[in-house]
Length: 623
Image (tube, rainbow, N blue to C red; front, top):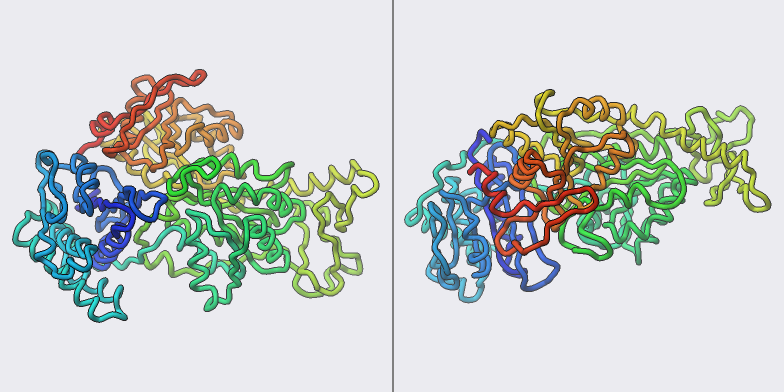
């Protein structure tokens, strides 16, 4: 990156305040014009375990949480021991010297920054969590930023408790001043700018985007990592006139959402893979009664309950196969957190226009990650297309009976809101004729059955006219073409740039629209590629199979990661080098200390597998 950057790691047990310390630091630097991308690797426990929040900070907007850590705030001994060896030369490890002692020598060029927290803040005796505030103040000074940004954050965070504000500000200032007198600042200090940022999570952006797009009904059953969509709507629904419901299970959730759409309002629901599994029969109902539906599946590591707090791109097959039979559906995978804001509006327009279910596939990385978003991104007014929606008796039928499922050339039939005079119809989940009357009560009519299936399928013929095609980024004649989908966009952009800097000519093609698929565009681009390497966060290569089924294109190689953690550029760079050395499938393993467990290598069918080790990834990363 052209601008100086710092990657900060904050670690501790659940209950140590890792997330709150990270949020305080993120807001403090964002208020001084710094872009932030933060990812918290946490466990599914209330107390204990190990959480590791990584935050990339730069005046140039970061697209992911980065590679090697430059500054560590260790809130317990375990974090210090795990991650000290991970720091890059020129980095610093900050810790409370009253409770943490170095167990081994720091890597060459890494500065140890012990903070005598009990001496710096008397409040520590009663509130041990004050060590977080002291450390945040200290690391802010090492970055070269002003204390005022942190002071305003603490003032707003504890605005209703003036004494708490004073206690925290005093502790943070003590850490800031102690670092100024006792530690060396980072070699490349961050530079304050006037850029204005909003600090958001992907889930918040999904909810806000839906609200901006006219969503008036939101229903959910809490399921990590989609729960924060529900929380946002619960907090803001009343003022936005959105009906918000938490109900007993995901079956009720999706049926109520379909009911709301059937009644004429825009309704949405969100869940994760386990909850989505319960929704699939109703998604088929949405397809056959041609009622709009927007469902968000925030993917986590599966199957079953899986790993509730870890990320994965493992539900593409599930979304593609949701419910039985053939019926139109649209599947979209937002590529970034800002994209999470704009995509719901598109999803609602598509669902209304084509009268079918639209499935949004995000994942924990996007939905629970924190990122700075430019104010201009949020200052929009989305166009609203309700499609062929009949809301009043306007005499357009010319004396003919209203046919809810009229067999039109486009396959799209005018949809009347229930209760419109002269527009009575039956909407049943059995196969039906144009007027909605079931065709299977007494005998099945093969001609009418085929007619209705063909009518629904015709709707898909024009969907791509509304969806921008993917574009190749990088030199057209590159040696390597990285292909990804959904949340891997940002890390692939930086990995491609890093590979080019290392002399490996690389371009990048990314897919957001999965169903329907831009078949000819993919063929035209990838048909000219010398070495197609598909990168995805799952074990079986779900997108690779999807690409093959849609286009007939077989990738030359695959880089995959399915250990619950997201890709970093170093993983992809190392994986590509393995591919160029002759491997066809490279399984990436997270390189953080403490996660380096031994796994067997081997083959699966004709796929030759090898894992990228910590050492290989480190060698691939230019410090």
